[in-house]
Length: 123
Image (cartoon, rainbow, N blue to C red; front, side):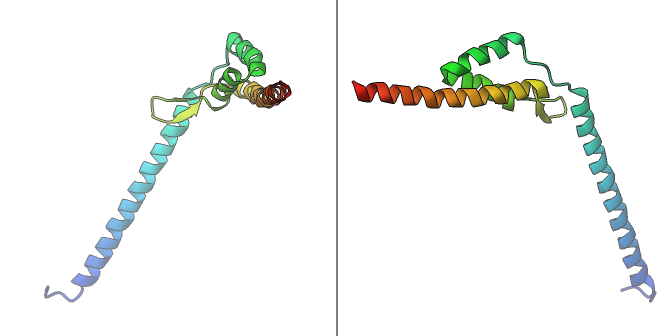
């Protein structure tokens, strides 16, 4: 032990200062990481889906499964930015069209299933 009676108190204050410095550094690093993430998202502009993909999705969604897959790709498609963050591949308008195509594909699958079952039962 030390001969100075105030040394324990000064060590506690010194430790408290180090903890505060580490907390400040941690907060700074978190802020830098968040800024990098926001910059990565801002640097990436989602692309508009091609007319061919939209037409194929519209035509095939009436047919069923393939249209369903195209619609799901439009709605949920994501890419990884250079910073490692996942963002939507297609813009909001393309994703909205994909949602409509998804609804049409599901409805058409239900209709085709009902038609198929009714044709099989009448045979």
